[in-house]
Figure 1: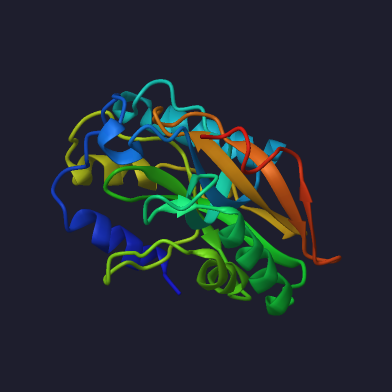
Figure 2: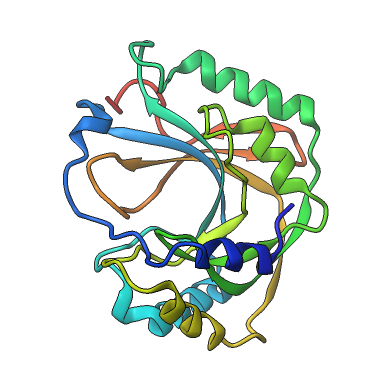
Length: 229
């Protein structure tokens, strides 16, 4: 579990934010078009309002063109692919294994709170309170890509990306000005497999499958491994 004070302390340990750039990222995607992740869709009116207020609070620091819908990432999966060519490819057998893991987890609907404005070095975000540790359990179940040994999962809703290296103390003052009363509770009934265009930074998410926590069933909306490479 993480706390807001710990997140702020870690943010201030670096003197400046990380500058994000717009380019093709070809050295990363190597010609593969769509990257997949498991996430919770929180594109609700109340969350959109909070994100808008946060963007207005930090507007002078943010990269233009970020249009990703409000979501909570549970685990990154890899590049959708018809066959395993690279270590970070996400193939049909990987998807089937994730669905089986979800069914074995037997997760029931749960409640979360979305509120305070916080920040990583590269991006500001809305803090997500996870009182039942459900998000952390889902993360352990679904995060199939190896992470840095020091990585600590922090449930969050990304607000945007920093356009420049800005002094973190300056950003911290803007974070403190975010209205504390803007906290909302949400009952989570499903999680989603989403994709985004790998050559874009901050591009829109497309939901290609939903897993219903009550019925323990997956519903696919797009052909997962036919048209995405």
